[in-house]
Length: 115
Length: 113
Image 1 (cartoon, rainbow over the protein chains, first blue to last red):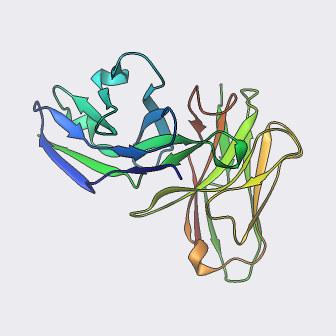
Image 2: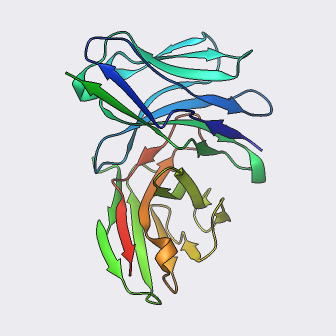
Image 3: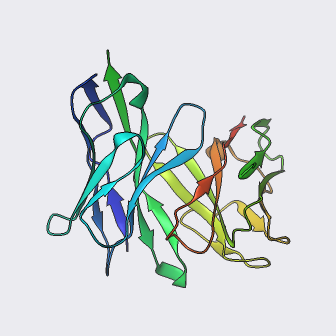
């Protein structure tokens, strides 16, 4: 069965420093990988995805993620964190069990950016 | 452009009561999903639908029923609410499958006492 793991419950980073939010996956076949962000009292918003092609995927607000097939990872990164980046981040992977496309989400990582 | 709209936004139920959560999308999406979000557990799929008149079970379907009588609406029902169903419920929709990602509603916070 497809699965995705986010090993850190929380990541703390100072504003202006680079940030990394980790995600590892387990899938059969080619993975479709996604990052979503959730701000307080809001629904999830799409950040970026990897389907095929370049291993470095760029998304909105300066975020990017690197697909690493050998390490089965899809870590989210940003060169310079902002306080406004503080939110809950979810990694997700496509699941084809049952014959239909759907997303399986990780448990989430809370990012706290301190001034 | 409303996207995905969930009603109600908040609800408190007594154990054993029933209720229906409504999800409506105006993007002509084929697929719709219901997830529940619990602390430390992320989002878990309850039920989903790949088109009008179809439904399928997800990871945690017990205690819930769904219906998709119209393409734009996906209803989640709790026949006899239990405290374990206290959660935040999110509806999402997608064009077809996962290639274009999902659009999420803003959630329904349900408390069962």
